[in-house]
Length: 435
Ligand code: LLP
Image (cartoon, rainbow, N blue to C red; front, side, top):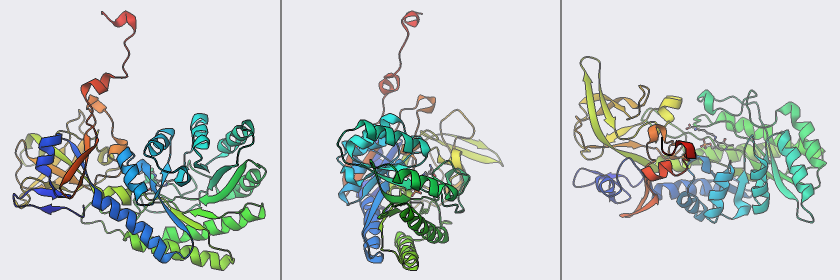
């Protein structure tokens, strides 16, 4: 995080707060979110769009990366809107008081209830498939004398990019959106629905992307689609170019800056519109990882160790795949530091393992660390995106707390789950009660 430094005690300090003291106060594992880093990323997107895009623009935060009241509120206070992909994310955004005209609902299998919630709140709905078209038409018929439902159409642009296959979305063999060979049919179908006001087109090509070319290509494809939609009478005034900018997890990663990414996207849009002789649409993007990812670290306490001579040393921490499922899911690589002895020489190469009962529960292979002892604090860096949001209760581990830090102040934003929380939804059929 931006505010990270090493303090006089040789401890890692974030947002003016000593990580060891935070762990003593709030327990471990602990997600520590640096407000300054989060706000700074929001501003970088917003300011770069204002600088490089001559038309109107809006940055949406892809709340799937981390959705909770405090994060939604901070992002919204920076003037961003939100992309939500479920009733739960929508509910959270509304509860955080995000204005509905800045909310966009995605999803390749939205339920009727989710659509109703979206319509009732007045958020924009991104149509992903034919069932969306059909259900929205039905729902709009059931509503009398109300204003049309604001929708966009999600396109699958057929653009390949180099990222993990699980998080690619723009290629043709994708479960999301409409393929180019369906554009005519879907534009035609939506144009027939007076209750749907189709204002925009959307496309997203994948996540943790370092290349710029796919986004440049995307602008061209989307602008051509605007022209096609126009032939069916749809007046497209908004384009959402998705998210996907990668972040630096380790020193080996070298992503473009937010500014460079925005500049590339904005210039490609302007150029494509000029070529088609078309007015500039309002430009939206919806980054998740690059907004929240670098803003958080996860602090763990070291417990047991196992040395296998000549092979490896396992250093176990008090969390693992339940609070960070990314290494086991995508083979993601993270950086770790010994937060309570920051300047100790890195003489060991160890494997940082979680506490779950499976061998694959490894957070970091071959971490360079000083010798660790039980009770030491390890901080894994850049854990803001898709850690808490993908966390589980595997092995019935309570989900960690999260604390927001800024200028020496720390505020709990997620309470640590308790054992009572774990059994709160459990129901015991009567006949099992006294087994
Ligand atoms: N918009 C749409 C429609 C998306 O599907 C996504 C991510 C985003 C925006 C935000 O992308 P970002 O800027 O965060 O790259 N769980 C995986 C990542 C899945 C991304 C899903 N969609 C991971 O941990 O790497």
